[in-house]
Image (cartoon, each protein chain N blue to C red):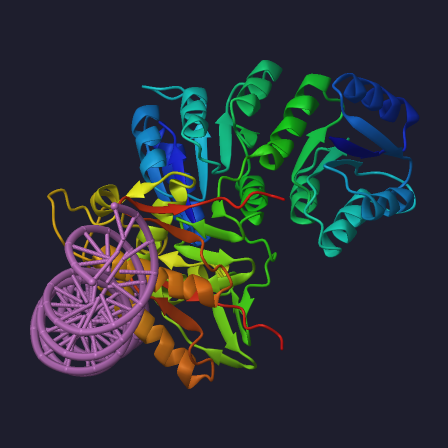
Length: 225
Length: 225
DNA sequence: ATAAAGCTTAAATTTAGCTTAAAATTATGA
DNA sequence: TCATAATTTTAAGCTAAATTTAAGCTTTAT
């Protein structure tokens, strides 16, 4: 899961980044509205955390522009001010939720989970066929036997399974799993697909990951016939 | 838009109903958790507003049961308590947002609008007849069965469907799909039209692509007769 | 009947993806 | 801290799939 934080106070931004990375999010930071909007429009984030009072372009303007561009990415705004007008204004501008500073990290996490829940439609039972994964503990089970994966292997498998029954394009994979935004002709994805397939095969989950040539990969939920 | 309010204090329930009906919502009220859950499960609401402290069945339990039944209806919860645990607990139980009592009606409205916004987003998938294509994932469906296309096949079909009900000339096709701008006497188009027709025929979408002799091809939206 | 346009097939060419090994980087433990 | 192990990335050869070419065949319009 990839987040963008748009926040000008380096202290808060850094604190959030550290905390969220511990929760296995991939986190980018922008320190002003303009560069934040740029990042938001040119990348595929799963959620934006936007401070309301930032230089170059206000949080509300960032919000409006993002929506104007047609993006439905969830936006959580941070505000020090607690006036009603602000909240209403912000939500109407296209934000999904807000949280007042100072806030507790736990509540922020809960609110992030709410916004991301829609993405993991089949709630938190991340599985495909006999394979199930637990993002909280980074464990993977094929039936009853556990499969040991490295962090990158896990991140890739998690992304594929979260997007079960959808084609994951190479560019999206490289963005979400590797956090690489520019075009590159690396073959890491291929290599990691090979790693994963080898381990899955050994655990009896052969050909779970299918190749869509010229596009990317897909994990299909086997039909129950 | 149809809302259900589950709230035991008649004063608050009535105030909300009146205010929301003025905003043209259709509003039902349940005065305890049990009858509220019943209503929620047997009707199609666009949003639920649930008080946390209600008799017969707590708000959190209503929330859980609704989610357990597979419904994704947005749930807004009302709480008098303002402890962190409550909020986190509620959001994790499946609520989408919460609002503290006492609240201002304006803020409630704003939060309702946020939750309903997702419903109104137009889905702009490209389709012709029973065939639909998804450029984001490069997937093609004929009804429910997926058709696997190579990248060039997909690009050609996408171009034809984007220009549905218009004749696509050979020169335009070669420009847009193959990026060839000079005149050439290649027969790739013919070959790919054959490939596409064969796959579409196999999936039950025969003669979707029609030839306009001397000019090019056209995909027609079948009239609904 | 004939010529032009389009269709189909098979073979040649090109490209994308797979695999492996080795290099570079990062984490771990004495 | 340094050495060692684990992980990640790069690079190259190989294979299979996708694309293009080319030739013969079929349909259509005059």
